[in-house]
Structure formats: structure tokens, C-alpha cells
Length: 271
Image 1 (spheres, rainbow, N blue to C red):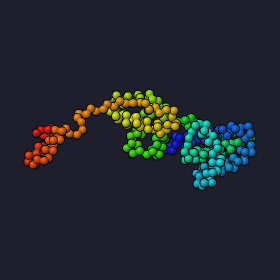
Image 2: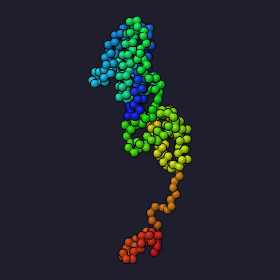
Image 3: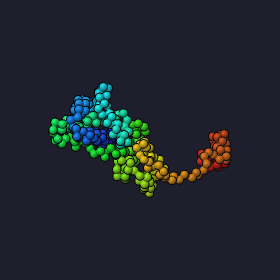
Image 4: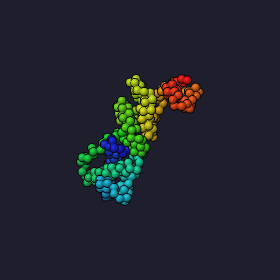
């Protein structure tokens, strides 16, 4: 999960999906005692304040501390359970989303404590939790460009080529790529007439790079071990001049201009 200019909807889905998981967990834990002092005390006051802050955006350090107090421990527990790693910016967004979810859960529990068990009409606002398990290549590529910016030409080239492979895979999830996908793709590119050097250093390099960037989130890099044989060009001749050529050039350079041989005759070693 990561911020990006592309795939922003996916990012919000991921954050809200995690918040929804917290919401359901809080409700389930207090199902038998919805009016417990903890929920009617801390959550009714602190969670409401945290929700207001999260809604408008954290503007002061003490506000960030409040959101962290209300949501931090819950966020860490759920991230650990799902094996997710977030940077500071991402975790802050998730904490704010979770603060909203805790507030929503507290309101429903307070309602139930008063004898009103009407279903929460806003419960369906949370997307399915499965969205957390998607390693969207567009999100990760934008993060790669932001953290390890390559040349603009490389950005365009890599993005296009990774997109082509993902279209073949039929998913935006990098975890769905298999070595066979990569191998078949490389073979088809060669069959289509692309130069082997282009396939190796352009297409395969793009996939290897993005998979290497997210290596901690992948079981293996599916592009590692996929090779494209590149035939070395045969040398027509060695670099430099032969002794005879060098002698002819030097002799010509020392002769008067009127007696010098033409360049083509010098090159061919004509005396």
C-alpha cells in the first residue's frame, strides 16, 4: 500500500478496508456489553474528538497524538496480523481512517446500549478487506519513481512495458506474475521480431526493476532467471590500423599536399 498519483482510488480503498476491519472487530468485541464504561467513556469522548480531527485533517502535533492514542495500537495490531508495512505518511492516513471507524463503532455501541439495535446504515461504506491483498503495480511504480527517480525517458518506457505484461497477466497485482508469464512474454517479443538486446535490457529490465523494488512484498522475483540470448556481433576487423595502413597514413601526411594520396587510397593501403 502506498501513495501515488495513479491508482489513488485503490489507495483509499485499501485504507478504508483496513478501517472497516477495525470497525467490525470493535463491534464484535463489545457485542455482549455494548454499554461498557470503556466504550461509553473513552470512545464517546476521545473517539469523537479523534473523528473530528481525522475528518478535517491533523493540523497540530497534539491532534496527531490524540489520533494515535485512539487508533495507533489497533492499527499496529491489524498491520502485524496482515504482514503489512507502512511508511510514516501511509500510517498516518490509516490511523485517521481507523479513528473514524472507531468513532462510528462507538456511536453504534452507545445506540445499542440504549436498546436500539437498528443496523448501522453506514456499515456498508467500507470496501471488502480483500483489497488490502492487492499489490497494485501502478501504486508501486509511482512510489518507485518518487523514491528512486530514474530519467523521464526511462519512466515512460518502464511504465509502458510493465503495463503490457500486466495486461497479459490479466491483473494489476504484482503478486500474480509468474516466471512463466515473463518467459512467455519474452519469447513472444522475440517472435514478433524485437531485437534480443531490446527485450533483455528494456522489457525484462523494467519488470526486474519493479519486482526488485517491492521484493519484501513478493515471495520471489518472477523475472530473475529469465534469460534472453544475445548474439555478439562478429568483428569485421580489429580496432585500430594495421602496420601497413599506419605507414601509408604517416607517409601521406609528410608528403607535399600535391603528392598526397586521396583518403580512400590511403585507407586501402594503396602505395
